[in-house]
Image (cartoon, rainbow, N blue to C red; front, side, top):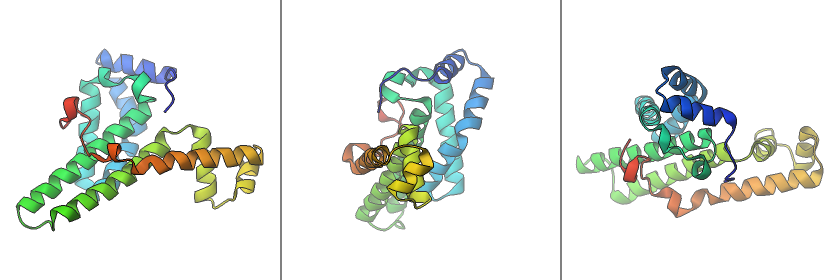
Length: 195
């Protein structure tokens, strides 16, 4: 992920949150709540659990605006997406472990497979969210609109070589979704503790 200076909006939003401006939290929620909720719902497959994760993520952001480091975390959007992914996977593992303890949740191996699949899917969503818009747009054109690289180039107004480059880079980023370091399921709180 690029380490450049975050957009001005991200810096201003972080400063406003640090000052305790409730309106800033409202703006942030309006902009990113669907991203957080959709990520949580995809992982947890449960509306109420996704609602809870959404509350937890925005509560964490409100209470810890200085936890966001643009040099390490990239954009504010990418950071919030990562918080949602981590908290969702943590909750999935927590609820699965509870079900195992109560005798109704299958085996520990099945739980770990479920957590792994959900973590990979959530990481792929995060990668797409965090990648540069030029790569994301190329992938969306090719895969959602089912355009080949020539059609994607024409749609984006770029050369065919540039379209191929963007698609290749986007796919290379997505291929990292299976990296195990991203699948530990640890929540985003300090020291890996829950939010």
